[in-house]
Amino acid sequence: QRIVEAAGIVFDREGYAGATTPEIQRLANVSRGGFYHHFASKEDLGDAILSHQHDYFKQVSEQMAAGPVPELWLQALIDISHHYTAGILEDPVLRAAVRLSIEPGPYQTADSYAASLGAVTAALESARDADELQDHVDPGEAARTLVGCYSGVQLLALALAERDALHQQVSAMWALIMPGLARPAVLTRL
Image 1 (cartoon, helix red, strand yellow):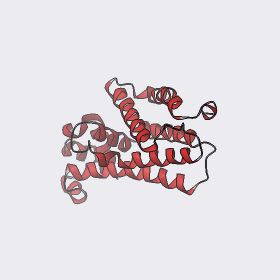
Image 2 (cartoon, helix red, strand yellow):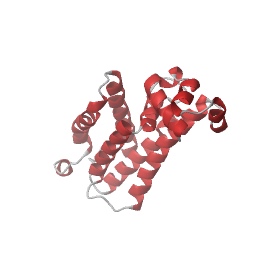
Image 3 (cartoon, one colour):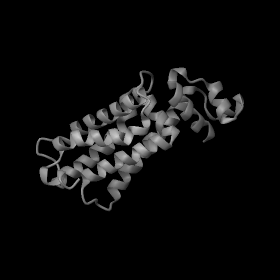
């Protein structure tokens, strides 16, 4: 766990290409042998970091399926995005997973986004079934747009060194996008 957390800090700060295993070992306070006992390569460590993110979204999906049913699925989706935002701000491993997913390299793949796309699609399908979505909204397409927009908001916050304003930026994203998703009667309740 110490190694994964140290890697989260280093990957978040330096990116995958710039991160070195000696720096991760130093920050985790483990020997080279101790590091390689747990991880055969930097890529294995990157896989562990993305697994942490996948577990987060798997848990979100399981909680949505298990209930209780929220009053509004779209509000639940907004709440989940802010909960995840808080996680990014507090958890260096989640932050590193975001960085690995958005920067060019071995983790900028469809698999890096599969768990978040699945969770958002499931929430939007539930919103559709609850008659919260406008008729033209396709949950799968909307999920791709939302995950892409959220990723862009994160990328811009990283580039501008404005992570402290990430919640505000996520709220602004929802204010712009939600009128295109929600039925007017639902929109006024969000």
